[in-house]
Length: 149
Image 1 (cartoon, helix red, strand yellow):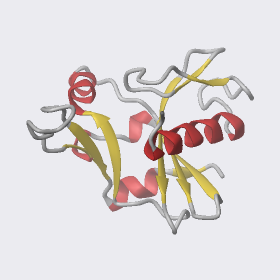
Image 2 (image 1 turned 90 degrees about the vertical axis):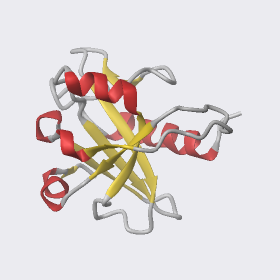
Image 3 (image 1 turned 135 degrees about the horizontal axis):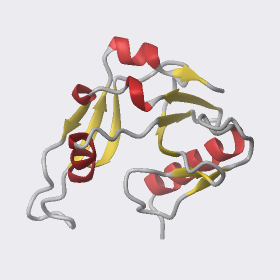
Image 4 (image 1 turned 180 degrees about the vertical axis):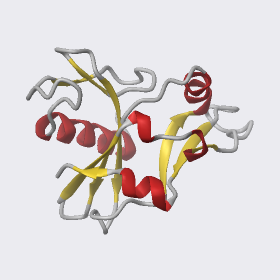
């Protein structure tokens, strides 16, 4: 059974697929969902192979970019960053009435400082030792997001 956070993430991915063209090839209706737990990416263009991450947040204010966004697994993100691989980011923000916005940050506008490791989970946690990360967004990075919807 999916958690509320997983349902929210699935909703955001579907919103991106329904409303966005591929940023690389500009084709409509070519973005597809990747399988759950696919590493570092959530959607792929089935024409050109473009990969992107989708993050979805419940927020009262869907028009502004938040200061932080919850990321995923730090070790995987760190390995990619060490190889200078960054994935573009779609940010879907949803309010209580299910009104939403879609913002986009290209990979070439991301910088290592925006990825901040979180404290590993305690030894008593279900996934003890697992470590996530946060996207910590400064004012310059927030201005780099493009509003798509």
